[in-house]
Image 1 (cartoon, helix red, strand yellow):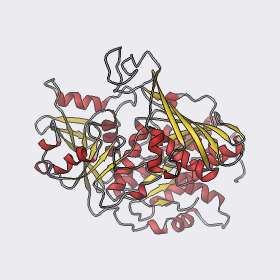
Image 2 (cartoon, one colour):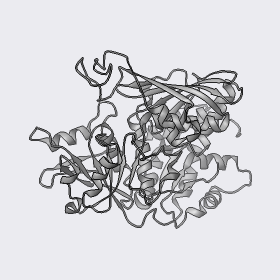
Image 3 (cartoon, helix red, strand yellow):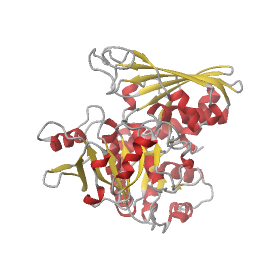
Image 4 (spheres, helix red, strand yellow):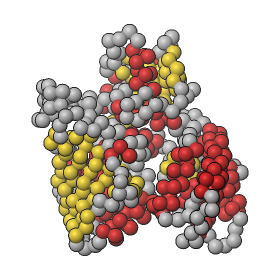
Amino acid sequence: MTQKRPKPADFFKDWKEREALAEAMIPMIGKLNRERNVGIYMYGRNLVNRSVLSIMKAHRFVRQVEENELSEFESFPVLEAISKLDLGPVHIDLGTLTNKYMRDDRGLSVDQFVKEELSDAEGAGKPIPKARDVVIYGFGRIGRLVARLLIEKAGSGDVLRLRAIVLRKGKADNDLVKRASLLRRDSVHGAFNGTIRVDEETSSLICNGNEIKVIYANSPQEVDYTAHGINDAIIVDSTGVWRDEAGLAQHLESPGAAKVILTAPGKGDIKNIVYGINNGDITPEDKILSAASCTTNAIVPVLKAMMDGFGVEHGHVETVHAYTNDQNLIDNYHKGERRGRAAALNMVLTETGAAKAVSKALPELKGKLTGNAIRVPTPNVSMAILNLRLGRETTKDEVNDYMREVALHSPLRQQIDYTNSPEVVSSDFVGSRRACVYDSIATIVDGDNAVLYCWYDNEFGYSCQVVRCLEDMAGVQYALFPKKD
């Protein structure tokens, strides 16, 4: 552990100096991403296209949770050293790399240390030989967020390219303008980060320079992607209309379509993938995959971690879930029990298939979990409460220390985030890019019984998991540096 830096004599001067360093980081981070497809992160938090204050807050998070002295003073020289190297497309966690240098006692200069740590990243080739076309079929909540992510992650443009959106034409004459407006403004997630231009003549949306065709169709059989110059495309089905192999296979009959990924739990023998857990099951031969559900993605990483660290004998999962479009705004007929009641006025007890779905990703837990759900009057961010009987007795401190290590340093750090704030509420997690956020303050442990509270952005966090699955399905795998913390 590094020695704590004395409090600055002038807090305002210290802030301005760190602010200037964060501002100077932005063009370096942008150039690395734009020209070399290098992603820069701060303990899993993406720094590409981020503001000065966002970069400073990412540093502050590390100081609070990791309890070290990482600041812009330490990370800026490391980023400078990174920018001097001839790197290929890789992901670099600036935070963990800087922290590793702070702990290194060999007397190396920053340039020497960074060159040594990133030696395997120099001259690295493209993740895939040529850019892969992606089509989003259905443009609702998840479809639009996946679109935002793909546009944001376009980088140098030679990996995944969002080429088209397929949807049913609305009744309004200005349908294209309305679709653009829904992508541009979001009541929950805020404004689109960039510019959107509507081209009525070509039926396209130009988003941060990405030309995206808007194709109107009532079924996959009506679409010929090759007519739009789209080939070997992966179709992201976010409609939820088809969830079995027979239904989703309709996409593969469209000329130019090659594979399908479903943004809902798949039925039958379709592989349900929770990225970070069983994405190793994805093979080049797979034509149809499911990215499971938002709740399954939220709970499986924590269950996997607890199973590895303490063992799980059995448990119950209760989800406190934001309402969705499936519910009624005011009381009206609904085929589902209770879901006909006004979503914004009631807590609605319903069922969830997430507990049973866990076994598709973690077969060891088959038959060991039960589950239920309560829909509550919030538009986004949910919570999963895991009541677990563990394989051995433990303490709250041991569980929290373990989960903190998992969230910051394990292979599950893309899936699990960690908070130790006693004041956070659901709206604080809007925009979280992790599958879930472990709330350490709320943890309850009594012998071998543990109750864990996990927040999750059931829209954006889940969409990030979908995109990770999509990248894997396309064969896109970025090496992550540093290889060891």
